[in-house]
Length: 221
Ligand code: ADP
Ligand code: MG
Image (cartoon, rainbow, N blue to C red; front, side, top):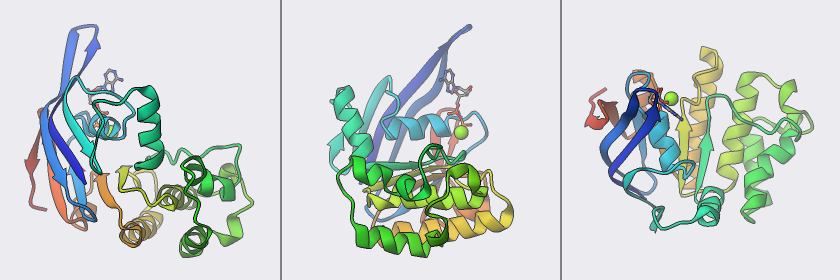
């Protein structure tokens, strides 16, 4: 489902090139989940952004659902981001001018993949029926992140990427969002690559890796 081979990425800064990823390889089978851990600044978000097609690597290969990102031009990457992956961010990233109902359907509409039966089921399971006509600013953090989970899974993407999805939530909301995310990812048949700081959360996923000094290492949590 996801195959990352020898990925390298550095940023240019005032002191020259800052290497962040120095040969990262990992695989994620269809329908399975992987936790990516590592200290702040170790490059977890960088790796997620590359896999999401939001940024380009210096070298290496990324394959998602049989498609290589390397050969894609800007239009191809836009189509990839629309159809193949969905991203859940720590800061929710809902569209402020759209009501919940339209945030939920946003990516699915772009992708031409609206399945109203599935969307209705997701809405109910996420407990969002009574909130459909609100704007994001009228929601709590936990409610906003439930909308973001629904928006991501509405597309039933092959791959869901989540960058510390509960990092901004209180413990109770975090537990609730995480339980729903794991359940719905499974229902959608998607694979999940999730960045987390929490050993307890990482342990709920199928596999765990740690990013350190630009490389990934196995982890037993
Ligand atoms: P993590 O998510 O593990 O905390 P990041 O991937 O956000 O780490 O960042 C890894 C390193 O790359 C950090 O040193 C960060 O300052 C640097 N970095 C991230 N994005 C950029 C950017 N757009 N330009 C320059 N440096 C960046
Ligand atoms: Mg990060």
